[in-house]
Length: 101
Image 1 (tube, rainbow, N blue to C red):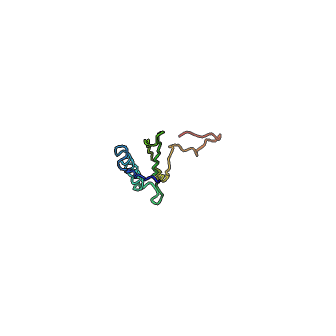
Image 2: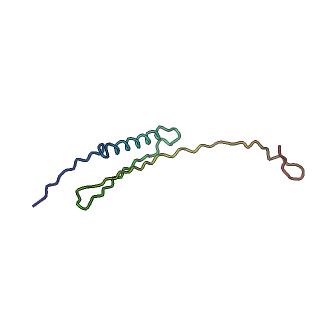
């Protein structure tokens, strides 16, 4: 005798009172903000990883579901500049000591 399989209607958009979908939308926003940031390399890959962790109880009828998100964005490009200290340390007195200006 074979068991009939029941389908489970599990919509990601409805999990945790829509909190999972809301978090995913937030992570998408971070990705697109990073893509539009001119201080990042345009062609770098960005990723959103969604982890769904299922923990059934002893009866296998109730399942606790934990959802976590990991987002990897493109690094910002380094910015170089020159900083002047306001001192000219190249001038020395006749004994080899530096003269403060």
